[in-house]
Length: 545
Image 1 (tube, helix red, strand yellow):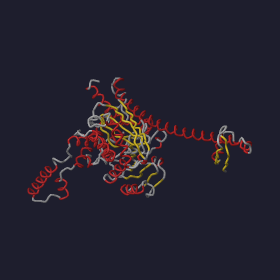
Image 2 (cartoon, helix red, strand yellow):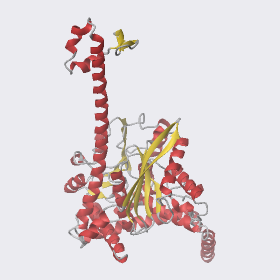
Image 3 (tube, one colour):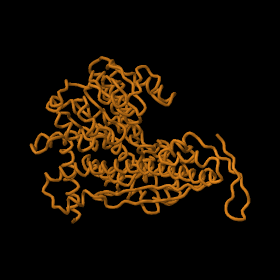
C-alpha cells in the first residue's frame, strides 16, 4: 500500500511530501526486529510518520549490512581459494625439497616470490573514471628474462599470481627453458567491456608495467593466459614499441602475438598439442601405463575433458582426430556433453561458437560436477584451479589424470588420489607446451627471421635430387605418397611441432626416469618437482648464492 504523509523535518522547516511504499519485503524484514507489532499502535497517531521513518532507516541498514556481508563473504571465499592454491603449491615444494640436501635458507629462497608488484591505474570509460588493479609477480630470477602469462579475471588476486609464478619457475626449470618464473593478472571481467575498451585498458596496464621494466625483452616477457589472447598480446607489443621506439627487439617483449604481428605458427594450439605429445610418450612406457591399469595405446581410451577453451578444445581435437581416442564427455561451467561412443569435437566447437555454450548439443546435460566423477580412463582438467579437492577426490573415477590446467588438484586431493592408485601427470610438466612455443617465438623475435626461411628450399633441392637418383638407379618410380613427404622442406609449423614434440618427450623421459630410480619418490609430481628444484638450486650455486 502507499502512504502519503506531510512530514515536518525540524522547527521552521517546510512541509515535505513523503510517498512511502511499504512492501511485503519491508514487513518481512521488520518482523524480525520486533517492531512490526507497533504498526497498529502508531498507525492512527501523529507519531506514525516518525516511527515509519525509523522503520525504513532500520530496513535500509539491514539491507546494506546484508549486501556488505555477502560481498565480504564472497571476497573472503576468493581469498581463501587463492590461499589454498598457493598453500598447495608450497606444500608440494616442501615435500620434494625435503628429498634434496638443501640448506633451509636456500629452500626458502627458491620457494618464495622474489617480488610482487601491485599497480592501480585509471581509465576514463563510459563517461567516468574506472580504476583497475593489476599484479605482476617475479618468482625466481635464476634465469632472465622471467616468463609468465597475464590473465584477465574478476577473481584475480596477489596470492593466485604468486602461486602461478612459482609454477612457471618450476615448469621452465623442468623443461630446460632459459627463463625464470613470473605471472601477471588484471582484476577485470573481459565480458563486461567492448573490444575497444579492453584495448584502452590493456594499453594503460602495459604503460604501468613497462615503466617498471615488468615488460621487457631481456627482463620480463609476458604471454597470454586465461581471459587474454592474441589481441591483448598485440596491443601490449604495440604499446611497448610506442614507449621504446628505438628498441630493435621490442617485439620480443611479449609472446602469443598474431603471426602477422611477430607471432609464430602453432602458438594457439601449443598447450593442447603438448598434451597430445605427453600421452604419446606416456604410452611408450609400459611400466607407467601398467601402473595406471591402462591398456597400451591412446586409441579407444575413454577421455573426459574438463574445460572447452583453447587448451581443452585442442587437446580433445588432436587426441580424437589424430590418435583415435574417444572423448566421452566435455565439461563446462554451465553443463556438459556426454557421449560414450565419442563426441564429434569439430561439430561441438562449431555449436559452441554459434550458440555461446554447449547447451542444445546432442548429449547435453545441465550437470557439471557429476560428469567430472563419471568413469573414464583419462581425465584432463583444462580449465581453472582446484576443481578436484578433498571433498570430491574419492569420487573421481579416472585411472590417469593429465593436468592441462594450472593447479586443478589441491594438495589434499593429490594425496587422496595417489592412495587410490590414480596416476597424475603434473601441471607444470603437462601444460608446458605453451611456454615452450613461446620460447620459440621469443627467439624468432630476437633473430628477426622466421623458422625455415634459410633452409627450406635447399632441403627440397637435395631431397628431390636424392629421389631422382634412386629412381634412376632402380628404374622405378618412387611411391608418390612418400615422394611428396620426403621432398617438401620443413615450414615454420613443421619445425615448431617437431621442436615441441622433442621437448615434451624428453621432459617426460626425465620425469619417469627419476620416478623409477628413487624409491623415496611416490609419484610423478614429486619426481618433476625434485628435478626442477635441483636445477634452480644449481643455478643459484653458480651465481654464488
